[in-house]
Length: 593
Ligand code: NOJ
Ligand code: MG
Image (cartoon, rainbow, N blue to C red; front, side, top):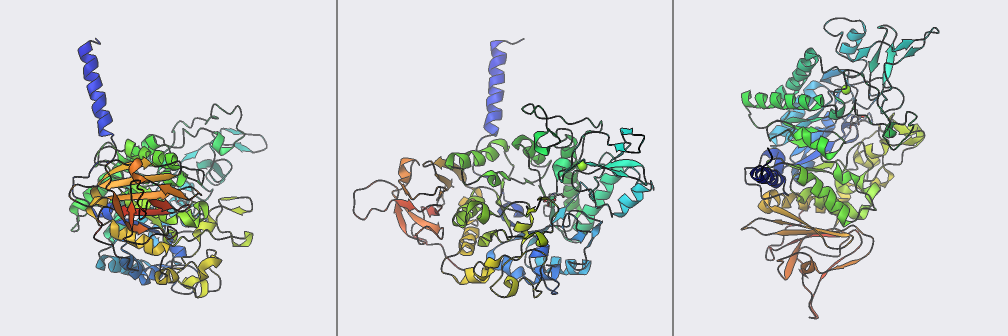
């Protein structure tokens, strides 16, 4: 019965739950390697070519490890390096436990891992569990119904066969690459399911044998020294076993098979997806416990979906799911986004994490337009400040630290099948890393490269940015140095909307200096009296990291309050400029290259 006492009790419980879901508060526990590290995504085919074939390779990556050591990057994640016909550039894998010849051999991989370990670094691989290539031995045997592979994939009979032989797929499910998600196989006389290309049949996770085999794949790479995995496409892992048709969203009367007008509730975020991730976490933890190097093996899960669905990948506590479900929310910002939008995007993550979970910040990858192209070169440092200085792990896509822009890809240069007619969608962000101003930006000695070289390499390249007085790279490195500070690693966070376009956030930790980051997302100059919005600020703060367009220097003093004094210097930020300020006025952080 609902008595007053019961109501009060329920209220107290609800308040407590709300409190667990409060904003980021000081992190009390010891930090693990993956929490303090920056995770750097390497797109292997475009990072460094060592043998002159125009395609990046493992030996190329090994030859560039100094770059990470110098910069302070501890963890690299390699996009797929496995044997693949490259229909979806390596996300169609025909052998999960070997290296594709374009990247080298397993021995090259072992030597890369050894070099990484010798430097005290960590390596993550892409794990692509949702589908294999149609060239994979399992699929070839499955077609022939050779046991135990018969039910390794999602096979089903036609819904109907017309007198002229046309076969109707079992339902209306669509592929992300266009058309039906079902393809008929003449030999087996059944349809198989594929959310991605026809050449990427989906594995059947309701088959225990598939689950076991995929754990063997994890084990194979763990035994070679891998420290964790970025897990691909987790929201597509399982589907409704009853194969219900998917319906249009209520706002559309008809949806003519237009992908984004349909509610894909039977093929996306199906509840069993989470159990798979939880099972892999258990596996990784038990592996770590038994291994001589019993450090944590981690998972980053890839799912572009609602915050409720993404945070389910964390699991109910810190031991159940992925340590780092990718936080893609900063990718949803565009040039229209003002400080309220940014605050909303940041709060969203922290409001939905439970105590003990750890955030991460993604600002780019091989599937989205490059940051500098989408948001403009001038805001690159501002985004680096967000990803490096908000509580959590920063994730960098190769080249974004230089403000590399998307390449202009002609029709004859397109590689990817996910395109809009003649328009390349994902090829532009997959261009080679610009090391210097020599041929192909130092990426390859071959005139022709797999990804389209960005002609801007003469100007936007690492070597130039190392030599320049100010550069995105130098800011990036300064920010990595700052991440070593206890305040940035564990301190409290508060966000402030200073004006329509100016966002600020503080990081504070008792007994340590505080940091205040201020970013102008707008296209007008802003005069900012920080003390009017942010409580308890000292009158003066010192610049710890200025963005290159900010007109500030390290150690310069700014006033936080209004004063008529002639020497008073309130903060003035140019359009898209940003600064990190500190209460530590005596120590000027280094600006080492
Ligand atoms: C996500 C990957 O990032 C993307 O490149 C790929 O096409 C799909 N998953 C399918 O594996
Ligand atoms: Mg699937």
